[in-house]
Image (cartoon, rainbow, N blue to C red; front, side, top):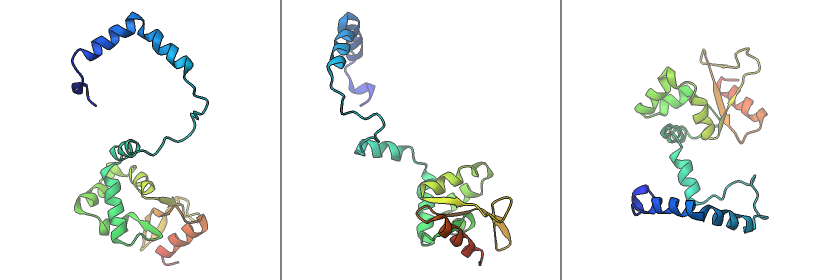
Length: 156
């Protein structure tokens, strides 16, 4: 609901009730409320409202990345260059813009791809077709399989 959904006298009336002893009534109610089954560390229920909040906070680029991954067949491992080849012009522009570089790993993580560090290189990057680049692999793979998938991109 929005503020406009309420009668104009609702909030002034509510605050007047609070000041006239309503806060004591609220406190008395809360003292009698049984919360023994409440677990403050439990995840929230996955209601429609929960998913609406998740969707509202998701960047549009996350959907663009998922679409590009679909186009190239959701490979075991992938580079940004491969995504560029399958991206819409708008998403390709986003990927090429240097100010977005720090967002790219987060977008991959939202798509269940994690960075795979090249343990044989000081900078952690992989050399693929003569260029150093980051490689992202499916989160579900074991670390060994992620590394192997990254190696396969570079031809071994």
